[in-house]
Length: 162
Image 1 (spheres, helix red, strand yellow):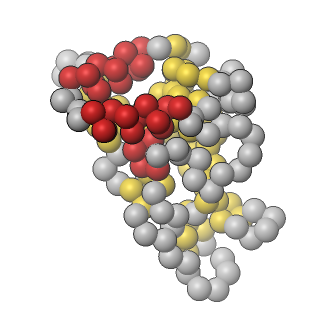
Image 2 (spheres, rainbow, N blue to C red):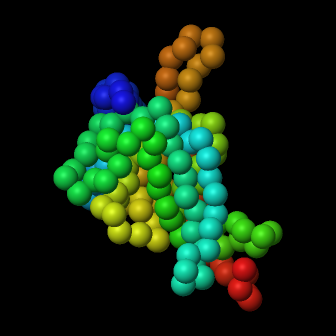
């Protein structure tokens, strides 16, 4: 497991982006409420029904670089990190949960997450601001950071069960 290089990228991004003081405080607060902060690449996403018929999605990351891990964090030593959240698509029906970032398989992200062993309908403290996409320039090999552009801003249920 790699450590820290993405932390330097994030700090550089925050310092050079001309971020207003209130915005910087938002990220400070998000980090404070996160058990685990890491960068990783999404390798899979699957939606399931829990035993209580709640639809949830599991996103699996690999190529992990841990930046912060609180004692409560359960995934820090795993080669893959699995994040579960409410909502998703199953059998052609979709349940959306507000302020959950839409993650794509194959993309790399810098993630702030609750990882205390308890299911959180939204495990991202700060919602969509808790996930930052890491893009790699194919020409130079350099990396850049940008907020996740796609976020679930409204919630709806499909009516009858899935």
